[in-house]
Length: 183
Image 1: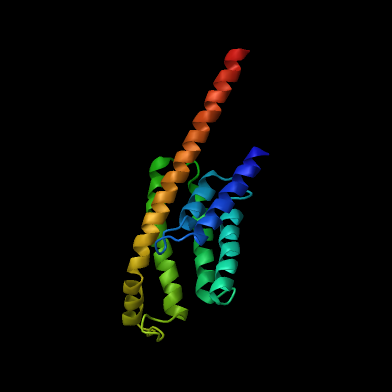
Image 2 (image 1 turned 45 degrees about the vertical axis):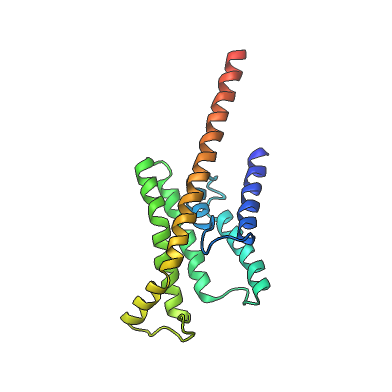
């Protein structure tokens, strides 16, 4: 029961953070997708992070007068699912591979999300990006400030989440040792 409460608390905290003022793209979403795949029960590892993102997007989009869903965001959801699937595959592969995956998350999301913007979105001028190599480069350059925020958010929240999991594991080991010594 306590793991369900912990999971619900984590989801509520992630959603709540999205409603607080924060720097552009500094959010726990990418971190939750990766760490969910590494730590959550396999049954919840993919569904819970994306569900939390979709639910918070619905509310945020309604508040801002945006459509409930739009094409580039669907690519983002797919990117987060892929991050979670890769994390599931890396689950027992050692810390070096997991660390490499953590480093890659903001860059992978940047590549996918900006491709979606280029395919379906508008440039900073309010005009669609040219469907050419120069238009794609323009889109990726315009997205660089968002990459910086994603790096800060993803890596910071990954470190926080990994620290919490390490403390929880140490606490449960201490609890088991204490119970064993009483017998």
